[in-house]
Image (cartoon, rainbow, N blue to C red; front, top):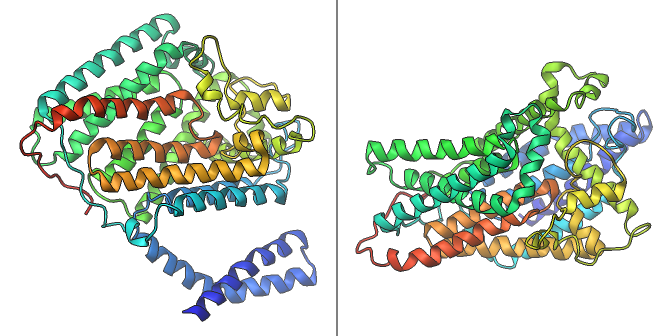
Length: 470
């Protein structure tokens, strides 16, 4: 076993070196030798890939040591590859080469995250796919109905107040621009999204945890209510609420209804990301010529919507590259000012988030919102490489603590909070975790709801066990 492990470590080190030789020295003797190495070692890598695939199918894929690191590695690997050649004047230099220094910073962030996550998850048995016990439904029926109705009234009232002042962005002539107006009413947006997300996940959880026992009318009401909430998210013209809700619901389904295997989850993730890409493309068409440059690089019309998948990743990595070139050579470190920007939004006035800081820092002018710099941008802007390691360590520690809390306390609220945090981390690869205060306020609202509802829940005489993932 040790001999095989040493062999695969050597192979892992030699493969990137061979790839670099092939890409940077085409036609040379070194390149030919490297190609021979890659060809000769391909059977071993196929065997290793099969073993890794079998191992992943036995694990809880949403464990902090599996889902996020895999997505993180894929994000920076894909974002560092030039699939198309584009002039700097067309897309703000997004397709200029990504220097190896960026991959070093990405490695520092991954090391910090793994150190933080591994410090709380001590044994591999904790993230076995069938080791998570089923979730208990502890809500008293009457208190559950009262809570859902009260939250639904808050959701409806705040939604009507917002749309009365801004209109419904998705029905406007330029939804890509009109959706930005909604952000100015965050004092209404926070209670709306907090109540809407809570209603959505409570209805879905009741539906999935009550299989075989729910009345047909209750089932139809739960499905109808969930669809209305998703429709309300779509009406604002933004991607984050709708697709964040879908991803969180996917994690909840995994823990409440049926575990998702790695292969099936991979297919679902690709479909979801492609859907996100097409949605962004269709919405940006309302800006006029925002997609003309795609035709200039040879992408046909049917391929353009799916090209947005790559653009989301590439642009965030490229922005991080540009930020590293400016900080600290031209602009000093911000010493915590960027990471704490979401908390300043509770103060009076309008506060721009980190994506706007990076856009102004780089001096870019374009129609739309800010310019995200991946999950590492805010950490680097504050404290440099040290900030990347410490920030990612803290994120890994938080994820592992929430995961262990969910395993220990098998109630709905801990599961919802872990699912939401997992979603925030995966989408945070684009622009940073908890980029806006709403992303942090929503799980805090669930903690408050749990505090208020728990005394009533304990009055239930026989809280029934429900089907979990075991």
